[in-house]
Image (cartoon, rainbow, N blue to C red; front, side, top):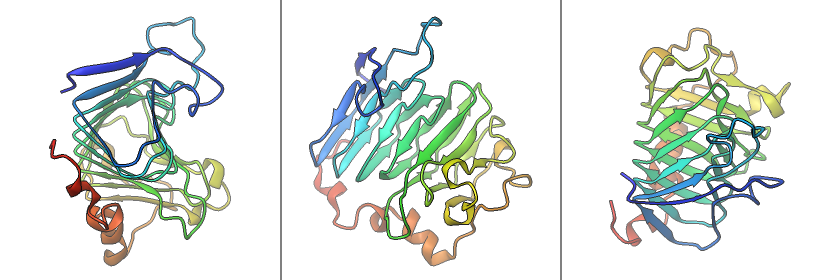
Length: 236
């Protein structure tokens, strides 16, 4: 549960300019803090615009029991390696987006209206970035896609995640990978709940070989090769 909240109501030309909190410092850890951008919240006269609660540039950042609340582009997970544990993330359009190489573990993801959860921006086959959701729960009041391709090689994995019935049957949208869908890496494995039925999913999601799946879903292989998480203050 968050004990302190940092909030602001700014909107600007892009989510990299309007964030309530912007991180450039490496080796950062936060615990029990809320990050909120109020611009689109409770103001029906506002046209929904990019209004980020947090924008992350720096490598080796971890967040424990933190909340990120906005509507569009809530969490700008822009670059480098990040770890989120027991966090709450609320938004609508592309509310977790960027080119980060990040693991979200045991997080509660709340889609406040219909749109897209993740928009990941992996650029090419050698790009190590991707969003991995481990043992998360997806709830909300809107009908949502699990993700859409912000770049051609977009990579998003949901593993052992509880999906309520708000997930659209097709699950994923090609967006900027239209015509090149096979280059994306959109994966669901071990997920459960009424929204996890893959019978009507798009036909270009992937089933990864066990070794590749492990390399992307094992925290110590994917983001923690140099054990930076253990070297940070213990706030878990």
